[in-house]
Image 1: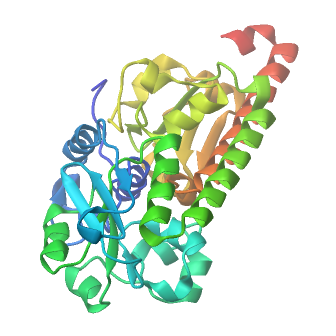
Image 2: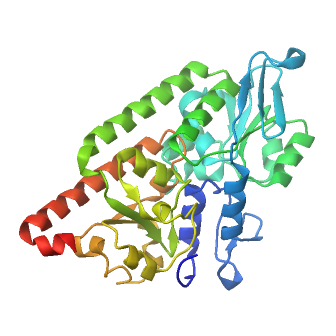
Image 3: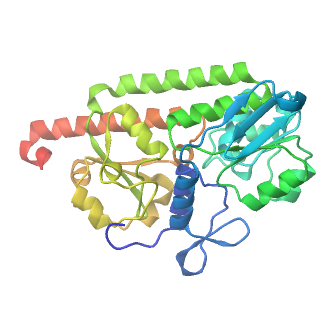
Length: 353
């Protein structure tokens, strides 16, 4: 950890939980500045992010068809085997990523329950579709079981107690373990398609996602190359092993947090960001109150007007909707590069300081 640790705001906590793919909690402020989970239990963000990073190392799911013992299909990984006797007809989701994927590739009548985030326009790019479907629920095991699902999608950051309860009730649970880069998102879409029998629809969605990603990279071109970037909001920075970092590298930019050896979403001080002196700084648009006014004024990014923001849907994008985040990221990097070029023509000293 670098520099004094600031107090993290509740909205920033929720944002970074999504980014690092641990956002299954309805977050609020708890005593002492911690963050509460859905059941009111305090969450240790640093401990959770370290646990998540350890849990997904080398995590891959094997898709097997046909399965053993006469099963239609089988999904293996992380010491678990999920056997699906027949294609599922009543599908539930506990994560925003699988909400969004299912809404895109599955028949609506087969979706019996989505997570609470699905219909929240602040975080969900599929909020309108989720509202039209109208089957948005909570996180409780009782509510999920009441929907009588024959398949539940969850994530490695869901509580193990809940997953165990669902499996004890005889409900197959497919757990998506890794959400930390673009390739993992592709694998997750393919897994959802495999588990639901919507393989072709999943492949079309993957193809569409990569087409948009490639177009964003072409649009950014050489302007994004080697720009020194930080995402810092409420004292939390995004390091390596995050979708944000992978998106930056895909576009050719440099994530200074990753370059300085930081993983996940550790906390650092504004002073450390100033020392790094990035060309561009991204913050969360809905958590602006967590950043003290003037805290970043000493940076080159602030002097050149290269303070950009990403909204909740961008920070929550660990489905095919990541393409939209990368498009907006590319456009922001192009704007930043053009400001640097303009400053260089007008005042070469300021542009290179």
